[in-house]
Length: 353
Image 1 (cartoon, rainbow, N blue to C red):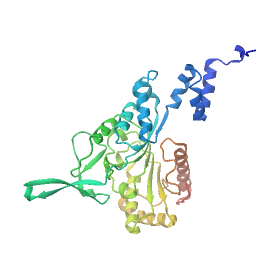
Image 2: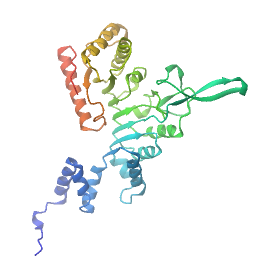
Image 3: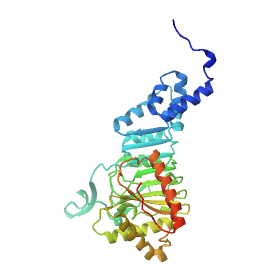
Image 4: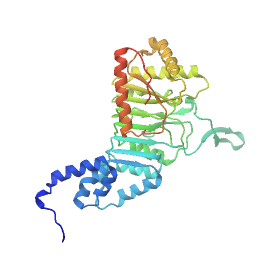
């Protein structure tokens, strides 16, 4: 004999919705099963499923873009409003990734890696026999000198271009798309379309609302950047610092000068986290940097005991770098705690993340 549920013990829709949404937020597999229960449950759970989108491969991105372009039940406004966190783990200059970014304009957290496509960079040289100049491709040691930069004025760019660049057309398309985004949390490896070092244009609207910024570039990149003062909303910044360098003293001097500038010019900054990667003697590295900051303090405006400057060792640098991840939120929370401890003790500590 068939059994039927007693209608009196079935909770009303508003209570049932709260229960299902809570279950979906706790476990993604549960959420995937709940959308299959009924159209009503799908309507409730879909916004949770699509609030965080992680695209590990191009095939995943193509499938997601196909959903955006062909879905009958989800109009374009659904993706524009419901996708809040987006992580693109492959080349962001890919045409598919650019279309996805264009469709998901309401994101609060963005993670992307501008993966190098080529190690070839064009240079112009004189060719008297040809009666002019010729563009020649050479394998160029990375990074390119900052003296080779040329700032173009043909529309906004996220990065300043290098001399005689031949970036793919997708570079300008990407810049146009990102102009419409206003993320608050950003975790990024900033490169141009060919994977070379670049100068981020922090004055552009894309960066205007960023409060938490994780920069995955190596220290040679971010120590050469300017314009951090244009990050008006910035409260937390994370910078990677690897151990490998032939000239430790020169490295410590450059890092110290850059950190002093960042601490001095970012008016709302609460934490400047330096993530130490593969450092066998992290305390020695920190002391070298702090010594140069003390030496430069009269010129740079920074102080060696600025409690906002937090150093921490990271033994697993490839885990949990997504801007929206629970681990990244925990890193910021711990950095806040360390900064407060340093404020009280007037000294620096070097914990593990």
